[in-house]
Length: 443
Image (cartoon, rainbow, N blue to C red; front, side, top):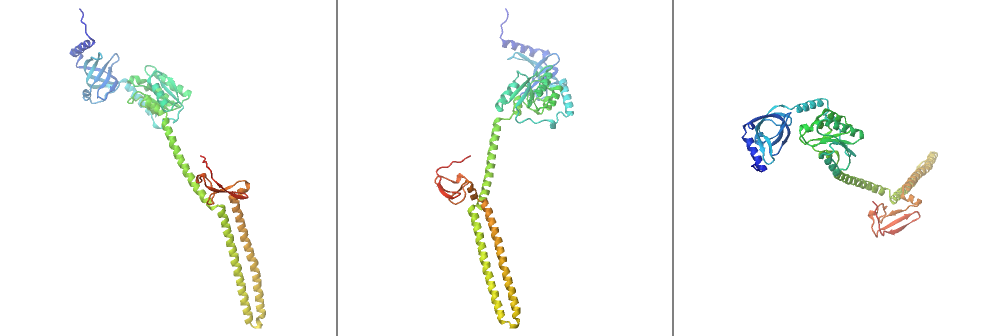
């Protein structure tokens, strides 16, 4: 009768067979590393393959400490260890206890050769990389239409700053995938977009290889619009990443680079508005102060008071000059009379001639003073006319009115008024007093 066993029992028996079979233990396994994953625990999980087959492998942290190099994808190795069964999953794997390098993988050699070639041509130079536009309207995406990349980009841009997304479907893995990637980049350049995102999710070196092909690198370099590369995980670097204008660690990061956060834009606009209002307020206050100074200097009442003061000074000067002239004339007459009385009659004719000469001088001084006084008065009249022309009262003749506060100064804003304030309204032919009932400020 056939034996009946559980799955666990079966896998456990297989594990015992593998562990007790000498041919499956203490082996040196030759192959190439692929799909290497490093965990925070210190354990390394990867695949060892050759052209005909592959097997899963694990190297625990204690074994990793025994080697003096860092394993990487496409590295050819010789791994020492044994075969074991993972009972819970029913899968067997090679437990690596030690490792040594046996050569560099072919893909890695091709990668390094192309990287060196394109770098020598200047395709990686920073000065040829273009800036990403701040406010793109349309973003082109070259990726698989069914992968998570396009979903992440659409979700992220929709949350940050909605834009039009134009997808150029491409094969991102396998033979001939590079042709569809190149075609997508060229198509988006012909259609016209503002920025292009080229990317895919993580994978092994073989999975990412289409983005290491030379035609893809040259298509990115020849693009008329900036290109953001988002290929693999943060630790993966492809030739496309070096040629692109910007390299993003993830598709979400690529979307965040391509568009700005509308919340950030709103905060910047609010900040600009506050700063602009402060600047306008400062300018307004400075101008208000200047206008108050000018208003105080050009006040109609003060202008008229200044003219009256000048006229008073002119009258005073005229009175003083006339008094001085009269006094001087009388003094001269007195001296001449005294001299005339003391002189001998023989000098009478001389004295008479001098007296006539003095009278001639006095006769010329009078008209000269009158002319000077007329000139000064004409200058004051012209000055008064100009001040009248600048006076707000001249505007009253055209139908306007002049409003003054209780202090007699012009009212230019309702901010200084309140209900019950008394103002004086001056018109062409008179003035009237008014009381403020209500007020309204305009913005």
